[in-house]
Image (cartoon, rainbow, N blue to C red; front, side):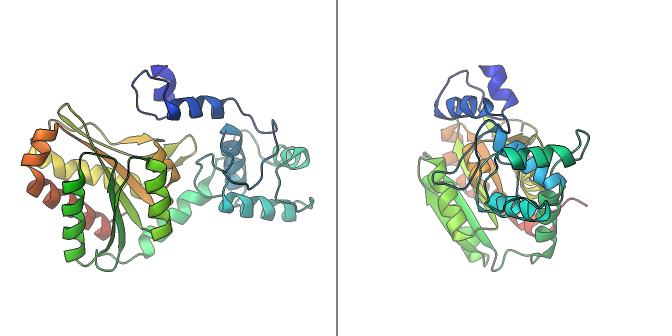
Length: 283
């Protein structure tokens, strides 16, 4: 179980909870096993991820390879069907799968379009916090810290949404509805902990997310009170996978130290976001 969780970018706890079980189910699908189309709730699975990889490799922007069949994937599928002379029904069925397999070589570089789009969006954005749309949230235990970070960002001129909800999917949905440009989720741990993760899948890595995760760790490491930081990790946690912007989950602990160091942590986290706004893509 731990090996599976590690391979899938999940929290490694050896417990088959809802997210691990969902990932087990998704891993059982291969492209062609079922019809893929837009529906509610959205279809999820490795077959969707393979479709996104194939479309991206051909230059059709299906978005990040998150294995969720959403509107961007549907639009890319429609464009492929139109260009391939197929029936344009926005459904990935046997004919579409066969056409994809005819034109996508095994050695084709997967999904470069989404990475290029994210990089360009980051480079085109203003290089300051003022008027930037920023989301910060927590799933329990860090309400005071997140509220303080939200106030500090607002004072710096950002447009901020602060989210408190135990369900990561709810937070992701609210951050997407807010149209946040970046999202920072804080999670408390009982042990001395300083870790940050960003979204990464087999064929996609959030460039802006990795950059922010590295900056957060740099800033928090300067205090040294949370223990030595772990390297920034690419993961597929729910809130990273379902948000549409650069997002980072920052895990810190223990709780007593977090409470004691709240003012310093606020300063460090705001500094990390300020540095990210100035240079969202590594040179």
